[in-house]
Amino acid sequence: MIVEGKIQPQNVEIEKHLVGSIILFQESYDLVSALLRPEHFYNEANGLIYKACVQLVANGTPLDYLTIATELKKNGDYEIVGGHYYVMSLTNDVSTAANIETHAAIIVEKYLLRETIRLGSQMIKKAYEDSTDCFDLIDWSGTEINNMLNVIESKQAKKLEQLSNEVLNDCFKSLSEGKPSGVPISIHKLQQQTNGWRKGNLIILAARPAMGKTAVALDYAYYPATKGTSIGFFSLEMTGKELAGRLMSKESGISSQKINNNIVDTYELTALRKDCLTFKDLPLYIDDTPALSIQRLRSKALRMKREFGIEMLIIDYLQLMDGADSKDNREQEISKISRGLKKLAKELDIPIIALSQLSRQVENRPSKKPQLSDLRDSGAIEQDADMVIFLLRPEYYELDRYLYGNEEMPTEGLMVHIIAKFRGGVTGEIRNRWIGETTSIMDWDKPIVINDLPNEDIKQFKNNTDFLTQ
Image (tube, rainbow, N blue to C red):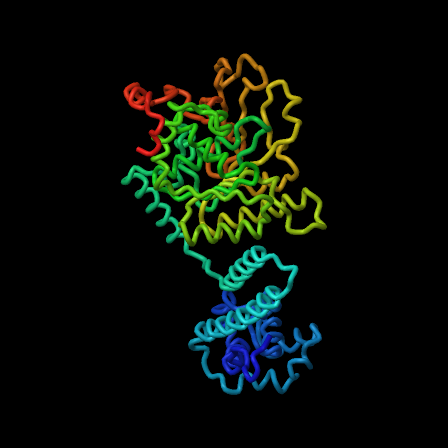
């Protein structure tokens, strides 16, 4: 859709000057190559000549008029660009490569304006079609806009000295402020081993069904939120209300089953009302949209980052996500989803924790201990992950004793975090306590508090059935 009488944003003269500078001064290419791509050019001939320069540099061939002309002929583009006359004319008015980076930025800016026109036209066209779902259109539009911005290379190479100084500054900040360098973790020994969930990392939390994956993930989300860290939680399995019920159970000590089945009594409802006051300013954001694709998840995550400033993302769980291509088998779909999550973690510069199912091979082992090969549907999950944690509750399998290090211990209330892969540290096992009634976890040595509702509060509401209005 082109507005009548309007020429799309472009600056062909700057394009010609830039390509001419590259032909005369090879160092010009080095200055603009990180930012500029062949498709950014408005004039087809200029784009094809720049494409030939890219190919020559990739092959280690020096840039000059003769090598560029040879590459254009090899590609069948020499006559398309105008042959000898046009290529030589590009250098006529070039005497210096000054301001070449500014010229490249202008070319990219014009390209982005043209892409905005194209995208806007497609949005208008799709919006007029009866078969279009408005929410899918909005998600698609957001993804396309973000993809447009990816044409700009924001990451630049850094000198080792600069990177080492950044590491020293992070260490000093953590030491002086007494805060973890990553998102804090409630399990003390896990916090000691990792110093918090690290930015840009993909953490896989995997277990067989009924091991408590969702409960542990909620703890990973809830604890840093109580410290003021904004957390995004995508639940593809449970509803947002069910997750809220579990957190209410964790906070009040009342059975999560009673809360989610709405069978609490007067006194328990009093406790829930009191404890839920702590949720008022909690920066924990839950999205229970089912069957998300990696593209739609990315769009939603970018919006969360922009609106709420989230510092960590949790996905429950990976195998419930939709693949991008219906032609792929399930293993290929999971591989693409896994790679997409790793890219998203680096793009947003936050840790992403993705829950994952394990295969039934675990059940066939006497110890019931999971292994990396048990990750379901794809080995790419293991490759893409910076950290893989397995959860095991030996009591669930009716095992009386569990060998923890060199110590055999009873399995009642025992949950084990098995760190099977950790790019930034050592692997091993960490024990913590599982509280089935409230589906929550805590440090192994921490005393259990069942309910903190004072007796005088119970007496106060004993004969008052209208307490919720007070």
